[in-house]
Amino acid sequence: MAYGGGNYSAYNKTMPGAYINFVSLNSAFTGAQERGVAALGLEMSWGPEGELVYVSADDMLRSSRALFGEEWGADALRPLREIFMNASGVILCRVNVGGETAQSALGTAKYPGAAGNRVKIVVRAESGGLFTVQTYEDNYLADTQTVASAADLADNDFVRFNASAVLAESSGIAFTGGTDGEATSETHAAFLAKLEERTFNTLALASNDNVLKTLYRQFTVRMRDEVGVKFQTVLYNCAADHEGVINVGCAAKGDDPAAFVYWAAGLNAGLQVNETALNRTYNGEYEPDDSYTVAQLSEKIADGIFTLHRVGDEVRVLADINSLVSTTSEKGAIFKDNRVVRVADRIAADAVTIFTEKYLGRIPNNASGRVSLWADLIAALGALRDVGAIEEFDPGDITVDPGEDKNAVIVSQSVTVTGSMAKLYMTCILG
Image 1 (cartoon, one colour):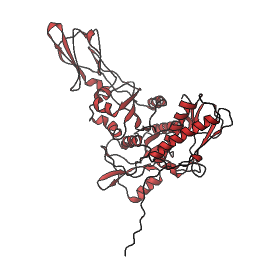
Image 2 (tube, one colour; image 1 turned 45 degrees about the vertical axis):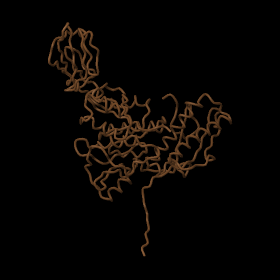
Image 3 (spheres, one colour; image 1 turned 60 degrees about the horizontal axis):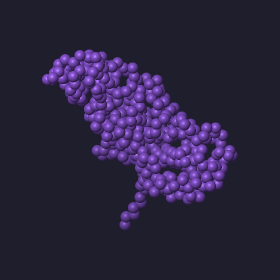
């Protein structure tokens, strides 16, 4: 990373940067950038292997064939449709690599993968020695060009043409030989390494592979606690015991029991700091495979399991919680609430942005410089107060003091996160 970050236990950091601790009210504090971006490593049959690609909701609707080799409503794209129920964008990586590229005499498919075998070229002879060359992906007409020779053909979203090919009329030249590569722990690790330089809100892994779950958990804890990059990761049946990991514990019917991870990741990414997932209605395409008693649902909350449950004819989020179950005086039970984590992450992100963009290496560490930093931090907290993410605070509770080193400042602040109504206790006296 460009700058240091993460937690600190002593004022002894060597790297320049912003180091931020969040602790419970017993010791100090317990616990406006837009959200909406999820990150996902997915096995696909089309697209660049091992590269990060940002896909917006509009891209998904308008360009799904070019991006994924599938129409928007295809079963293969159901994971992305689940995420985009709530997210505005996805940083996507094709984690199965090493596939073969389909080809024909006229060229090669743009990407490796079995989807390239659906490409075919239709060539029609025209007057004047010209040819109309049409590129089909399955039955979808993707491109039409009229040229004198193959050297005049421009590559399109599906084909890289062979300039030396000889054009001749044909009702369909099929591309063959495309195969999908393999996803391994190494390809997932490579994806996570590239992700370190990107900004996102939620990372998703819909797998029951314990090796991969451990990899993602360790990545998340390291990035949050050591590097200072704040996001949450949604995993399936992973008792991570950390506020950075959301443990989805309800299974989906069919061949992909971990599929609710996609929707949960999109939901958590899309929620703003003043919103909660509590009691949200599931609006995706999967069916829950479980039904629970009240006792079982209570146990899931105690065990830090994010789950869906039936309320009449609807499926709803039981509680907006993460996998944290072991609390301490510095990390209290309040950190089990994902809304609190989202607010804490926002406070941290705001502080890092303010410090690195305005103060780091630019503003003297004197009284006026510290007052300026104090005022900017107050303004950032004021924005959170105005949207109802935190309650009214006393500016006197936020201090910016000189550190032991001449280039260090020590910030202390106390704020209260606004809660969401979750329990109603009512006494009704009837006469």
